[in-house]
Length: 159
Image (cartoon, rainbow, N blue to C red; front, side, top):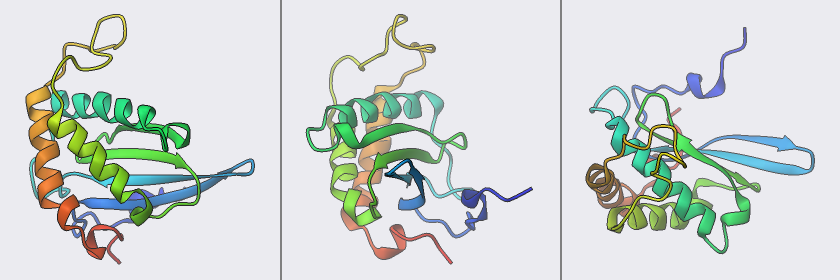
């Protein structure tokens, strides 16, 4: 059985950052998947489910309402390991191409006030598991410690 490409990355050396995870061609369209790594795997506590769920709701809201990126956004959602999220965009893109957008998205989450979009029984299968305060805290930490000080080591998977 072939190994899944993302499982071949040495998570013992993976830093927080934005990584081009894979590119797939569907018809004539290139889809680019990014690994938005908010936590260092196996070296720091993972995110609380409720905080990650709120990041998912706010991040998806931001991306699907961005005038330039809404039509390019295919998917945004959490990793099962709770160390980050995946985002898939239409287009042949690099981590540097999406850095300004991802930075703006985490700034949006860190500064968000009000009702969490889609956090009702009608709109979400687990609407009670939300934590806006922790989502804001995690987003501000990632923004201040990683996104505003990004280096190539945070944009390219370790060898």
